[in-house]
Image: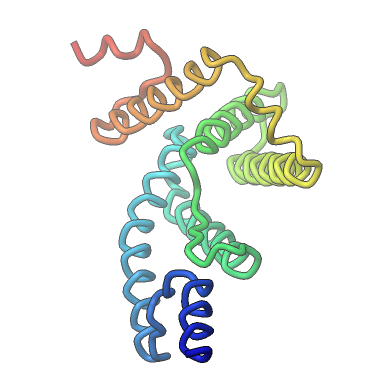
Length: 198
């Protein structure tokens, strides 16, 4: 009787049973299936992300190489996530929020370099754009890491809701404009350029 009561008590305190353990083969198959699904989803996304960031027609001759650069950066991003994240399901990929800033950096830096009194060559302008995008990405990563390290993320909640809503609304508009531009091969730079559809 004493043994039965202790067995019942230990089962009651153990909590609900966890997920069943899988064999190594099943776990590898599971990982391969999910990796394949992520690969199928990420490939067209990265191609469109490269086209959005480097949207100027001047970049068209180098688009294959720039697209490969996006693939490389996403692979490095995923490798860092896989090695450092405590979440086993983490996916490292370019996000829509970063596209806005990278696109503006690429466009503005290229136009600025080419509009100098002694304009740079295309190769020099492209190299300057890539360095500027890299520096911007590193600085952003350091700031985000610093906010997390100093546990300042709670202060983000102090942003007024209209500010957050306006920012998210602009992300939606930017993605709509970029998608329309990709689908129609027409350049959409501002609200006035939508008139070319009518």
